[in-house]
Image (cartoon, rainbow, N blue to C red; front, side):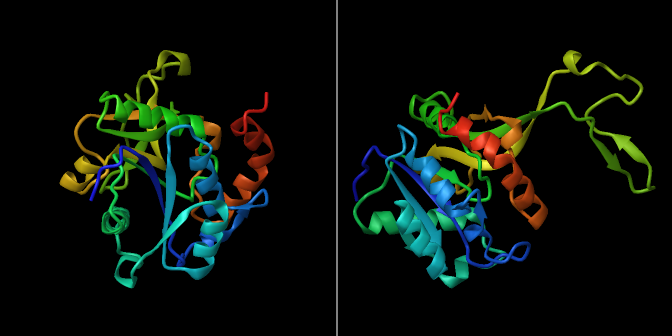
Length: 236
């Protein structure tokens, strides 16, 4: 085994999906979700190669056409109960078996169709320069959150219900989008979890912070694509 000093993006993409059958192959503006993830990673300046972990033949073919390597995920790691961490560790083990282990891992999710390559580069830079151990995507939020208590009443979570400050007077909170997580390979192997050590976030554009989970999300993404894709591709 040799540490290559390289950066790998790993895209877990199971064939099974309850919310949207064949979800990872569903298209947004003519490009499948798995292709969009692979191409976002390849459009960075810092990611050296992309691996798609899948149990599906069609996904494997699409990933290869998009320019990714493919690691076939075993059945026991492809069920609803299998964690993303287990898929990442399996990919790393397969790379080690081939004689290489990258320095940095970018865990990239195909269900976020508007990942900006520049945000990925920012996350990788923070990890490589030692500024952070784990960096993830988050969108700013000024939402007033509530929780329903056991007695059925609504309870304020992140604010004083009796005080209604203006938006500009409130410090934003940040919502984890699920688009990407970045960390060093060695630390991830040690902790076996995406969050460890000094954790930081990359603030992403909230307009594109969509996680495709049901047909409604897919319809929203399709409507937004003509507005967001040109921006992500560097158009003014």
